[in-house]
Length: 112
Image (cartoon, rainbow, N blue to C red; front, side, top):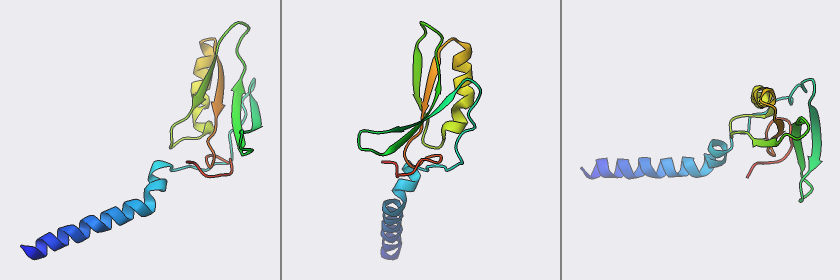
């Protein structure tokens, strides 16, 4: 019985150590790609954040008088994976700004 308890504790400690070592990869899988192919009617913006880090965004302008949706993708996606969503929102008359995270797509840096 004592051996089983020690085995359980050792396994639990190994799981904790693995989680500590790899939690950033689990939380921020940061897929890399060569960046989005800019669709017709859109503009790829290379901006700077307030801390001077690069920010990339894909802008689909709104029709006159329409709203613009600012969209930040999920942690396993990039700008390229959200272009279809932007097209659907445009079909509904909205403008769209898709923003890329640091360390995702082809944007340098590290997510946090």
